[in-house]
Image (tube, rainbow, N blue to C red):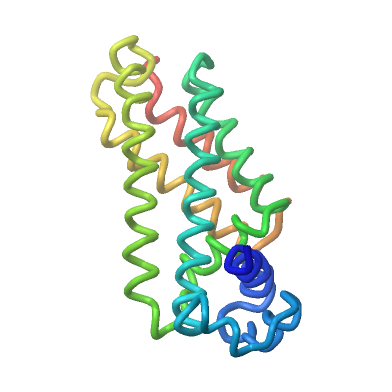
Length: 193
């Protein structure tokens, strides 16, 4: 129970203040325990951060899997476009998403290697989940015959990454404008005329 509470409170602190700005003293005070008690559950701030990061990544993956499963009957264009917009809204509403994306793009220097490796694995999982949808679309003639499922997935991840960057650096309005422009070019490029 206490470990889960520490993780929950730590997520809010890391999401709001980043790694450097979050303090174990503030986290423990909000949990209602002494700072030293955190060490009964985590070796230190690094282990707590990486645990919270992985937890957030897993919740993000459950969102993605759930969205793709619920949208499976939609035409590919609507499913993918809806996915981008759902993720954009999620960024606006969820600490998990904001924290995960900020740390994936701007990890603490001393944890960069671990965070980047885990983030790349996360993107690889998304790519694999999408590939089956692109393979089905290719079989149905929805995507251009010269576009493989691998290429369509990789290009979609690039659109997704671009949206993430705009969300991190810009705002929801500018992200929506750039997302729509990127989507238009992307979809025209992969669809079968």
